[in-house]
Amino acid sequence: MPLYVSDKQIVLPGDAVATRDYNVSGSIYWDGDVAYSAVVGLINIRGERDVEVIPLSGIYKPRVGDIVIGYVVDIGLTGWVIDIKSPYSAYLPVQEATLKPIDLTTVDLKSLLGIGDIVLARIIDFNLTKDYPVTLTLKEARLGRIEGGTLVEIDASKVARVIGRRGSMVSIFSEELNCDVTVGQNGRVWIRCKDPGDESFVARVIKLIERESHTSGLTDRVRSIVTQYRARKAAVKS
Picture 1: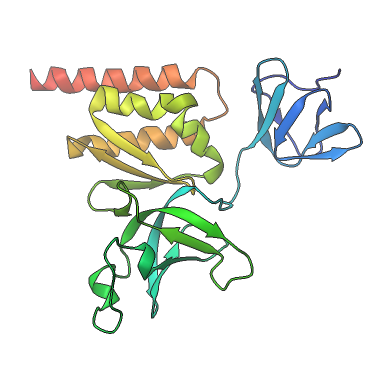
Picture 2: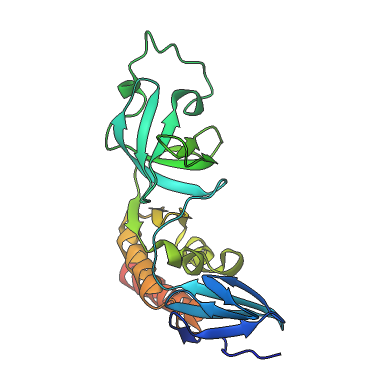
């Protein structure tokens, strides 16, 4: 039952990962009974049988159900074209933008969302046969136009690391600094802090997580960095 890699190991395209005795997932391909890495990636081993290859860089590939952060780039007759940092165009139909019915003959869509506005949305359809393969909705309580805060862009392949296992990484910012960090699956991160002055610090830490996502002990190190920052702030105030 060969396992050719170890946890947190960096692999290159074509490197052998494991045989079919293991549950191998992520960016891989099979040749016979052996799985090989398809990318430059990081090995994540969970338990005794689960092995995943996580790409160290890559584009965002939309999935139904994903929460994404996008920019309004055009306004059509029945909705808005949204940039979600993906090769696939996204569309927000007017009926998915509000709970109230809209009369398109009397309402100017610019009054609802203008070019350059930023939205937090969910993907409800992905169909490559459409002119706009990705369909979005804002019809959930926490979705809608983003106002205030700070936006940071990261590689989409690093999203899971920024969130942390069971939200362990982003929870550091809420617990230590009273900051709400919303991570879009497309690699855009919205930061809102009780003290707006903390947002630039959180943004720098998120970029650090992105750069060092392959290193071990990162969650503890980030918690230490944030705790020290909070202590320095308290010392200045006193």
